[in-house]
Structures are given as C-alpha cells and as structure tokens.
Image 1: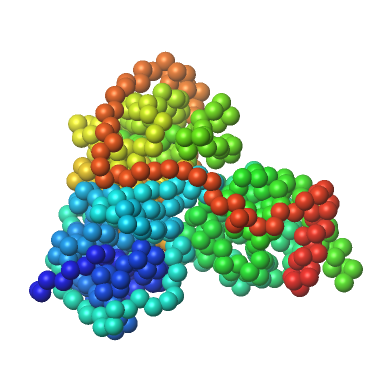
Image 2: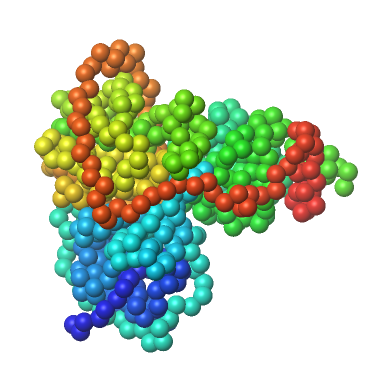
Length: 330
Length: 255
C-alpha cells in the first residue's frame, strides 16, 4: 500500500456496520484543533464497512477502513490493535475517539501500546504554537480541569458527546477510501452479540414536560412529590438520573443521559440533579430547562435557563399549588 | 479464585468544594470522603462471586494518602478479606496512568484470576484505570459490565456490557481478566458489624509508591466553570419564586 501521511486519526464508532452519529463530532474536534482536513483521516472498522467508508470519502475526507469478522460488534482490543497499526503506517501523532465506554477502553489500550498520554472526556481543545490545551469536567461539573501538552507531544483522547460541533464541512476536496481486511480477533476477548433495550413503557421522547429526579430527592418516598409535580402538566413524564435508577427507586426506562435516553422536551424540570456530564448530554437540548437544587454550586445551574436554590421537597408543593392557581386564573 | 478489587476514595459529592490559591482542591476539615460509588458495585460483585465459589479470596487495593485507609477499612467491612494501601502522599494530581501503573505493579506478583474495578471514578470521570491495568498486564478486559457469569472450570467469564443508548453487548473473556463494573450490576450491601469489628483490628499492609512525574503526562490545573454560563437565578421567598416560575410555565402554554 502506498504511504499516506496523516497528523490525526479520527476513529468513528460502528456497530453492525452502521456508523454512529458521533463521527461528525470528531470532525468538529479536528476543526477546533486547527487540523486541516487533508491532514486528518477517518478510521472505520466493521465487518463489511467498505460502502460506508466510500460514502464518507465522497464527502471529502480520507478514510482508512478495516474489515474483519471481529468488528461486527464493539471490539475495543481489536480496534486498539488496528488503530495502532494505522498510526505507524501514517505517522499520525494524535488519535481521537468518541467518549463512549467502548471507545474509551480502546483508547486506554492504544495509549499503553504507543506510550502516549491519554485524556478522556475532552470538552474543549485549543492549540497554540507551544501547547495544546484541553478542558474537561470533574466533580459533577463543579470544577473544570485543564490539561496542557507540548505542541509536539503525541496523544490519544476521547471527546465528550455534544461538546464539539457536528455540523459544518470538513473536506479536503477529494477524499479517498483505503480499505483492507484484518484477521480474526485478539486472544481472550470475543464479542457474542447485541441485545436490545428492554421496553420500559415510559414515553420520555413524546412528553412535552419531563420532571426528572436526581440523587438530591434524598429518599424514594420523595418520588411522590415528583409524580405530583408531573401531573400538573397535561403531557408529562417522569425522568431520572442514573443514581436514582441504580438505587432501585425507578426502573432504568426512566433514565436520561449518556447511558439512558436523550430528550428535548418543551420543559425539563431537573429536581435534585447535580448536573454531571453523564446526565447533561441527554437533556441539554431541551427548550426550557428549570433546575431546583439545594446546592448553589450544582453544575446543573450552568445548563438551566432558570435556577431555584431551595429544598425541592418544600419548593415543589408550593410550585404545584401556584401552577393550579395560574391555570384557574386563565 | 483470587480476586483483586481496585477501590478509590473520592470526595463525597455533597461536600462543599473550594480551590486553593495553588489551584488545587482544598482538603479542609469540611470535606468528607467515601468509596467511589462504582467501586462499591465492583466490591459487591466480588463478594457475590465468593458466595458462589467457596475458597475465593478478595483483596481490596487503593492508591492515595493516609486517609485512604478508612476507605480500605470500609472495604473490609463490606466483605474484602484483605486490603493493601499503596501510599501516595502527594496532594498533586495523580494521572490515572500512574494510578494504573501502581496497581498493575502490585497485581503483577499477585496471581489474581480476576481484577474488578468500577467503570469510572465519580470525581474525575476518566474511565481509564480498569482498561489501563489490563493493558499494562497484557490481559483481556470488559468494560461497563452490567452482569457476569464466571465459569471457573472453563476459565472464562460471560459478561454483558452496557452500550450508550440502552443496548447491551455480550462478550466472552478468558481468565485472568479485568472487569470494569457499571453501577446497577447489584445492590451493594452495608458493612456488617462483625466485619467492621474485624476491620478495625486488621492490619493493612502499606506499599510506598515511587511516582516519577515523567514526561508525557502533561500539566493539569483546575478552575471553576465560567460564571457567565449560569441561568437566571430566582430570588425572594419560596412563595415568590414558585409564583414567578408558575407564571413562566403558564406563559409558555405548558399548563
């Protein structure tokens, strides 16, 4: 194969030969880094991914496609092995993947294999002459961590969903797809199949209003207030953060966030939700966000349009009464 | 079966956080600490395996300053047989790569069949230590595990791994391996009284960490999120705030 030099590899995620939507955000990252489209390449690994690779190349970016039986489902060790090979082949100094559990695991392996630093869940990137600066959220979004690397240092990173723009062009004019196949898998790990989400009977996506409960509701008994608040609105549903579901207070069908549903209702009323990135990526596109939390430092307040610092068990009953009054008054 | 469980001590999310003039989290008396929630699930999974496979020995390991011993005692209280403290006194940022390398160094000699860790730490949300330890030891791993079935005779684990958006992938992993456990895989138990009493007296061996701030880790600093990003803060009495909010949602035609 002819030698192709690249600065940056963008590893798209594929499942059952479908390319995940986060691929476009990888372009957004490359743009933010100031990497010219011609110097970046998209990497797609799948069982039969040639067609998808050619489609992406037709949009104007070079694509390295790797086909193998082991890539029908997510396969982090195999992806890491193939990405490391493409790094050596192209001389790339940066590998960027989406911040999903599986891509993140592959990123860790690449980082060890190549001896490169690894920065996960990146939200912004800024390159200057001397440094590349990354920022990411920590402590439930209450603190921002800044990491700086030397401009010449190689690195592996994963990008937090929703942090980089997924529209806007990223084309060098004429992209090419370089396809090859790879053998079997890696020893010790084999994906067996995918099973679907269980039917929950909770229609979060159709609701105009979602009243969501977080760790801050304090106890399962307080779900009553959440449901009562939801009932004030004609087309509403009850959502939850992961902790509430982990505690067994509500089934996982109610979960909003990275590992749950992504919603954008007309009103999202976040009750006792701290606002960790895990949750925020699933609800930040809601039209009107109101947060009620007793912790004035809660990160949800930077996402909310309207903020109420109060004990939700005391505030919500008053709010419910005021809503009824407002409706009756017309 | 020998199981190693990696536990991290984190600042309780309810604690008030502040940054010192050095740009680091101030570890004042106001902070409370506890075991990373995801690691509680990992530890409970180890205890459940021991219930099924008698003779299983569970060791909990943690990297950090002296106060980390309390979290290790909690791990003993929740059912670990042994604990080991890798002492790292520096208050400076410890990159997950170094934490993983210290744990991998400890695990190398241990002959563990299974290494369990939480899928992430709830403070820094890096999601790295589990897969990094596996990569450093050159053993397979699975991440975001929401159920597992260990077949000791065949030397393998069938695991279900959660995928973003609600799907699950089933995977087969051979022992020895690392499983990074997702929250919700089980219901972590509270420490038992007898275990807690035992934990008080039990010796926790220390290993002194030798960490070099070598190249390739970058520099890290912390700040508060930009203040300008905050939404409109309602003020006044509870009644005033409720009234104002009710008027807003009414105006938007949501009632």
